[in-house]
Image (cartoon, rainbow, N blue to C red; front, side, top):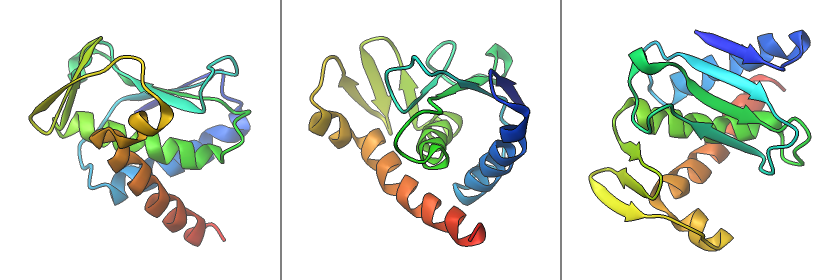
Length: 142
């Protein structure tokens, strides 16, 4: 199920379609509760958050915040965040305030340069797959 907050009605169908498309492409077969919120004061293009840092369908939806004013295409940003949703749902990633466990390896995170951030293995996967997902999405929407 997808809940929307501060998202214009005119965008909801396209976002819902994109979520379904990207999760299918990522092999996520589980029903996942997701909330999508537009946030123009985010300071980022997009981000993904969990109530407890570990996916538990009983704890509430996975939250995705999108900046509709981003210079990057919003659906591309959504694809990136849905890679993180896949990582959470499949148990590949668990997050706490200063640590992330990804595919069984623990990482301490804090202030990072942009290059260091992109090199984190869960981000590297998300950036790589976002490109493929975005191209596939554009191919069916041409």
